[in-house]
Length: 287
Image (cartoon, rainbow, N blue to C red; front, side):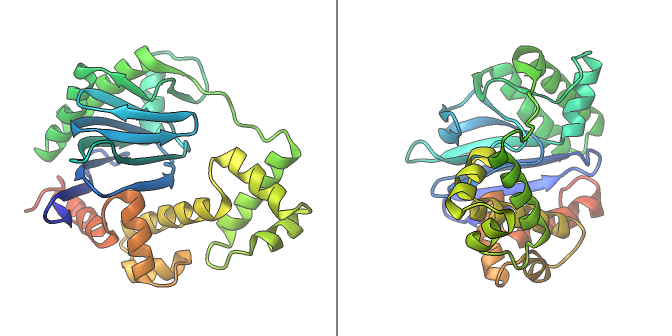
């Protein structure tokens, strides 16, 4: 496993080749804190030891053993230890395609589905999450896929709903969307907040307020998260960390290392090695 702190912390973030729409993370963190960030897909996690404190737009959730944490795509959140000894957990990151496929089998109404609760006490679902990890680590594709679908179906049945569409009706929301597109396009050399606001015909403070309201974080925080996402995709494709760092706009590889580790939970080098091992062996385990 990739060592974050050899003394007390460890983490492994990987992908099982037979389930390409799913990322897996098992970890124990003590001092590590996840800054505000979001995911393109879903987060399904269970705490196996200690307590995790999850910060969300509507408040915070303290999750202990037996708790299942569910976070929808693009929901900004933070995470840190809720007790001095930290927390250990098993996490699944299914893509929207995985969730949509199960929702279609359940004849859910058309639309983007999601979860209406963040933290629920569900020991059976918690065990299913660890069972997916176990099956993937053993190279049992049939079991991993089957258990994953049982898990998602259970959670959708108990806590699922069609999410409201986020349409930028107001002028501020439209400005925020345009600002996000501009930052995405000019990631390597982004404009200042003042210059960006001038381009959009608004004031810096108004843009800052609108962006935070629309995306749950200020533009500079969102940009760091977006850079890490793009770097992940580049690492998935075999790009070296140093090259990815420059391509996404970080000053150098140490800057990528710091932000990537904080947001993803493992350093980019360890992340890339796990990806390479996954597709070399087909299981993500060492040969």
